[in-house]
Length: 518
Ligand SMILES: [Cu+2]
Image 1: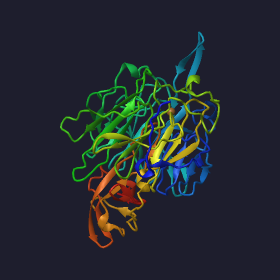
Image 2 (image 1 turned 180 degrees about the horizontal axis):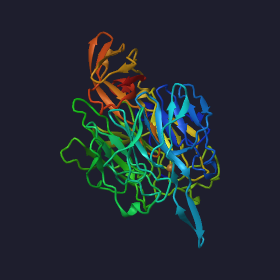
Image 3 (image 1 turned 180 degrees about the vertical axis):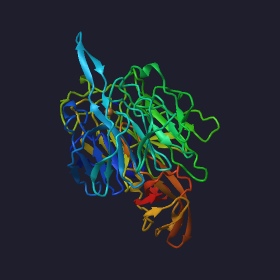
Image 4 (image 1 turned 120 degrees about the horizontal axis):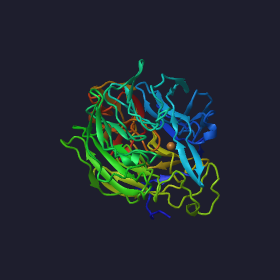
């Protein structure tokens, strides 16, 4: 049992709600839409028999609990796509599964003979009509690509396994311009691991942290993937060397909250393991990209070593780290001696894996220290996801420790700030805001508000979440129940799109209102 006794009042450690909601299909991908609903989908959901008949996406309404199915056939399997929101709030997804991997039994051992083959399709989900449309194809198929939006609204797509031989070798980087489609980003070719952890920096460059996800030890284990930064204007990459701990497979990275006046970009790198499947690590590092020569700096480790850790940035600027598993990595993890003697074929509610970490760790970026919050009850290992909801709660989804085993329960966490006995009320805010604009906010607590933040909604899978960003606005109390807050002029701080606007008194946030920035 991997655990730690945590005792305390909900106002100190938060509280998990009793599990009330269940997806119908494995939610490999989740995205919070600006309608407040969560889009969840997994295509064939890691089941080769469903590649030609993938499962539909579904929408979960966190306010009513209702789950509805999007009964719409797509022309391809959207298992293991990449995603990013467009400036208008629609979700672009790209890549996916053209065909599953193949194995042969040789001398009684299963030997992989071909990896997954990536799809070149793209689809766009409209939160208002709740329908998909097909987008332009990319030049190449991509299985496990990462998408990241630039300050000008274009979206860069990197990495993935290709559709055709030699599947592993994909150096081409593509860029999507709304209304124009895909182009190759010339001069930027680079071989990257699967689902590289990418973040847009305030100077417009794209940062690759050094953490990633891959099933394939060869040839990745032969070559390291140093931390590096791409300038999309020139196609030039700058290398920053390896993290101090290079065992970052299935670790995670988070762009830490961006704060005025300098909006200094720092990235946290947490946990992971090795491509060879040695034990998970608990090590964490931070890099400050405003420094002349940025270098990873080790900080306090998490309490638990984990592969698969799902980060969620809260309105108060702290981070939750959820889920994952200690021990060695494998994509067939519920080996009999770890499942506690229950039936591994159970569907929907999986048995507990003794190496699953249920402890929730909270990171305070001001002190760079970790503490424990209330323990969750459902394992979240491979193919799990987590995201912040507009009401300040956190929802956790999925788990697919081996093919055919699907965790469908959604578990919801109420952070300690929901038990402090008061909450500021955000009465009014503009639905749209331009760069550099002073926006007017109405709240009866205007004189007591200590911070105003914008949080971009999450679109995530596989511990990779380039969408997640938390930007504090400069604000002042103008009169009575009025505040004014300034949207930064730099679109690279807040790429165009919908954001959740929260006002806070100390660490207690209001319920968010949606603001379209751009
Ligand atoms: Cu996967």
